Length: 183
Image (cartoon, rainbow, N blue to C red; front, side):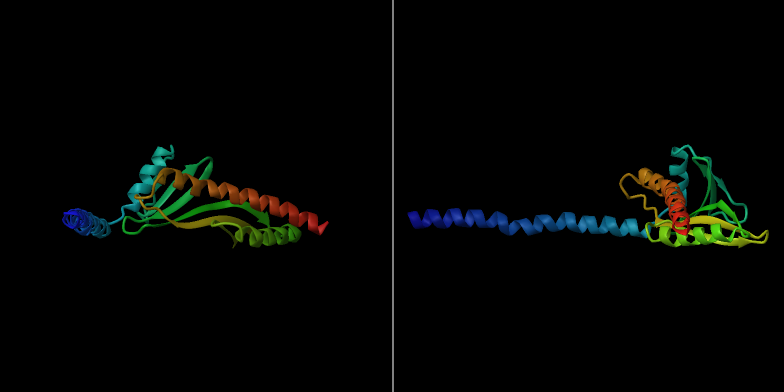
C-alpha cells in the first residue's frame, strides 16, 4: 500500500512538470511572431521625432529641398535634425554657435586644443569649419537612434538635445584651461 501511494503521488507531481514546457512554448512562439511583425513595419522615426519635438514645445519646419531635414529652435539654439521614416537613425546639428576670427591665432589654437579634449568626453562631437570670410566657426553634431519602443523616449530626445549645451559648457571650460596653460 505504501509503495502504491508513493508511486501514485510521485507520478501525479511528475505530470504537471512534464506539461510545463508545452505551456511555455505557446507564449514564446506568440512573442516571436509579434517581434517579426514589428520588424516588418517601418520605424516612422521622422514622424516620431516631430511628435516628440512638438511635445517639447518646439516649432518644427521641414526643408523644401530635403523632406527629411527638420529645423527647430530648442532653448534658444537653432537645431537641425535629419530623420527618415525608413531608419531608426537620426543626425542632429547645432550649427554656427561660436565664431573665432582667424587673425587671433592664440585663441584659435586654444579652441582647437579644447575641441580635441572635449570630443573625448561624450557622444556629441564639436567640429569647426573655416568660412570664406576668414572665420573659424564651431558646430556640434550627434548621431543616434530614436526607436519608438524605447521607454521614456521623449526624455531621451530631450537629453540628446540638452547634450549640445553640456558640450558647449565643457568646451568653454576647456578653453579657459588652455588659456591658463598659455599664461
